[in-house]
Image (cartoon, rainbow, N blue to C red; front, side, top):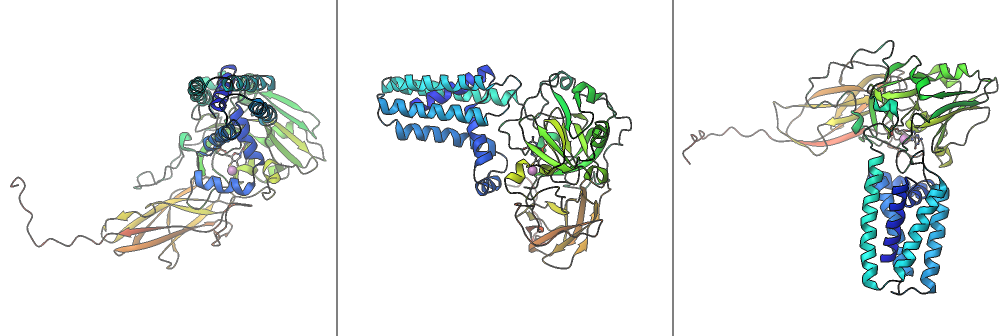
Length: 499
Ligand SMILES: Nc1nc2c(c(=O)[nH]1)N[C@H]1C(S)=C(S)[C@@H](COP(=O)(O)O)O[C@H]1N2
Ligand SMILES: [Mo]
């Protein structure tokens, strides 16, 4: 086991120094892509956001357990050598097959170098006396910690990628900028921010670390069933007439009351403009968006006629961050994220036949899947104990129905009748909408539920369903307690300062 730790530490450190792919990340990617879907569906709700770190830790634990199991003896024997060789071979295969794109410098040869170096250190450690082995293991642990820090630093989740244009921090202004996002609920106590700050905006993807794309080398290709295939650079795209739009992006994994969605102002280029220019052939029916790491998702070409779809370059007035798809991503407000388009998009491919998308291969409903209307209660929070302020409790939250716009939000106290909530202003049909309701509540425990109605008359579904295979349904409800008001004290309060 110490030898295994030394080996992994060495492999990860070499990978970090060379800027090549990490073996632990490759092993993690193997689990994400090939692991049983049910396991993945269990891990998501349990871990919520630290899933990638946990998967990486799991990969490390597996290697160490393997070391402990097979390298039982202190001195190296043929068995240990064989075990190390087997592990190295597995490392080579996994790195070659699942090594993810961590930067433009990546090459498989580099990954192999790291794995080979790690195995050599592992084998050398096996030949050492146990004390020396322990020292090597400590060094390995230090190297591992250092490499993880390096990797985290090279892909900062809250800033943009390494490209020059990104460094300048600003996108060209759109010709028709939208007015500042204001909905009239700015002074509501406890209201959710109208725009989700980028650093709190959920991140969902199947990439172990966000690819750091160099915008100078990056190209977007429009190809396939088109008469004029096109290749565009980041600068070309910044030169397009940019448009702004406000929209909620919702993950199909979002559960009742969860925050796997965010509302933002996006900047981009209408996708149909780019596609029309490439002259789709009459046979073209499907638009596939493909990311730098090979992730694919498809949209019916017809959909682009009915629904706005964008090649997005910015979020909150700034270039996209690495985590959110820098330099460009495809987004269709109203569709769940995994059906809308690829982050770090490199190819837009038109074709006549349906595509095997990443998620459809994993058993999810084929797209396009529209976001269902839903309301979330943000205040009070579940289990909160509130003072009785003249018997009224204000409940507030957000509601979204980006496929149709929010028509109304209703709340029900203790399974009572549904009553309309007050709605804040509407930024756009695809944006979420803030709401609140003042409820007359006696002291004691209560349950409040909320539901959203879409403008097409669609009412949020009551039946509770899990995210798989086509998104959650049900009502978000929370329990809270109202304290009985303090009995008026019959005794006059003691003057201060008398002890
Ligand atoms: N390349 C790539 N694009 C992707 C994904 C992915 O795993 N890889 N995940 C999709 C999913 S499931 C969602 S919900 C949104 C999330 O975007 P965000 O991380 O910016 O919130 O991106 C979509 N685009
Ligand atoms: Mo998602």
